[in-house]
Amino acid sequence: MELSLERVVRRFAAAQSTAHGILEARESIEVTLVDFDGAFGRGEAAPLASFDGVSTERALAALEAHRTALGAADATTARAACAAADPLPQALAAIDVALWDLAGRRAGTPIAALLAANPADSVEVNASVADVAVTDAASAARAAVGAGYRTIKLKVGTGDDLARILAVRAAIGPAVALRLDANGAWSVAQAERVLNGAGPLELVEEPVHGAGALAALRARVAARFAVDESEGEPADAVALKLSRSGGITGLLADAARARAAGMEVYVTSTYEGPIGVAAALHAAAALAPLPACGLATLELFEAPSPLPVREGRIAVPRGPGLGI
Image 1 (cartoon, helix red, strand yellow):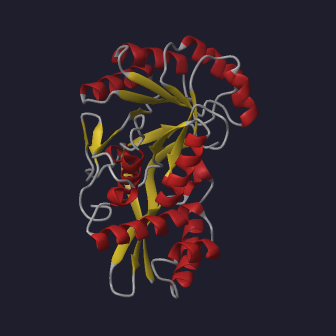
Image 2: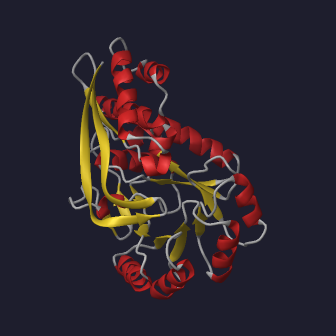
């Protein structure tokens, strides 16, 4: 099999403020995998150094090792050959998605239909609000509800979090789910103070860092917690990402383990491009029903999204493979 790589940079329409810093643009690596008969599939490697500690250069080095390993591989041996050459999950995700895209194109069917007998035809998604100013956060949340979203995820860990939470709740009303994402930025004491004053919440994603801190917080606060960066720690739910799981194959395996441990699962992104988001949508459709997934991120870029959100849902592409 032959592998080609292309570095792609997408600019955000507005800078994204997170607990890990400010993002103005997002770089990823789009890959095309061509089999011996000319059939092909596409994938995407989307490392994010500020989040997972993996640079684009590190992912490129892994993919170059994969290119060598793929020289003697076919579609049935490609995953194992690449994992043996370099097991970096962010790079393996690109190869895995490309193989699923190739399989779907060969079969003339969407990836989701290869993964499940009755996949969902659309996936509910949350709106993400990262505005630091209280009034801006409330306005953004109100606009999202007006556009049809039924779950709002508010990025916290920056600014006056409690004031922002209360303002957003007032703006969206009691019927809309409110999810928080702290990216582990709070101490246990900070999280306890904010969450005990926040009112009803759907989930709190990664409120503190580390298993000990999360266990201490669970003893002090009556809230449902989800893990993200600290996947594997005991929690009520887990946010699954293609890049961390090593692609669709790994994500489905991670979901099975989490559900067996009694945890709810949902699928989120690390600001991938259309290839990564389309792959995540197919995986989410196969795992449905799910809570609202964090896959509305293409809406945040300057370029128009090929996977638009309508009434808080994204349709799963119906074409062969990824379908985009």
